[in-house]
Image (tube, rainbow, N blue to C red; front, side, top):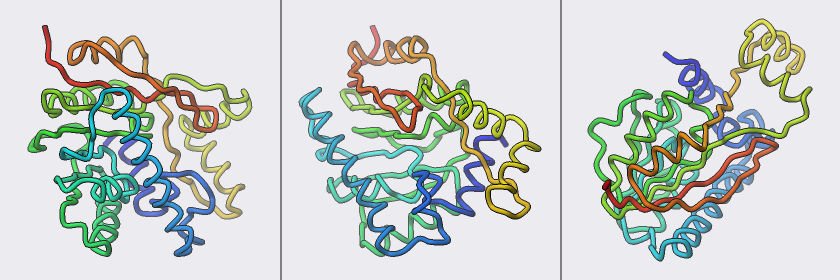
Length: 253
């Protein structure tokens, strides 16, 4: 099992909401109904922005087709996607614990067109074709080589003239002390153990989410096999720099 999969499964067991949005108010130990509602409202905002973005860029209404949310977590985005369309919506994640929570949220809202499923972290066999494929703050936590393979598979299962919208990181502008601390925590377990124990005032080793950078050149080489045009919107999440790439699948020459 890769480090990224192992860490995400640990977050799924311990702190699934904080694992998605790293804000202390979403920690399980202090998660109130009000904060949980706020957590899901952030997903409503993203879905509305996505619908507007794709409509303006490509003249397509994503509400008219079926949707896949890759790396869905507890359903923060998949749930509002399922409210947006009458078509089927799927959410994929590697964590059984997280999918169990996602199913509970879905059932409480009576969303019969929403389906959550686990996958093994490397193969998307048995996944149907989709009109709109979304992946947001997901690939940054997946090792580059593995992530590129998964991205190619997502492009393959996108229908002809379907839309892929994926956010990927390419760098950072963090202060050197902040980045050095983050780097040491991800690469050296003894350092992370000491850091986590001091932070929580008890002996522990908190899982660390990787932040992997993807070469834009490699992404463009891949995208060019499936589309003739890519729309880009830059992102900055706490100093981690990335971009939302959106393309309409148009086949290969």
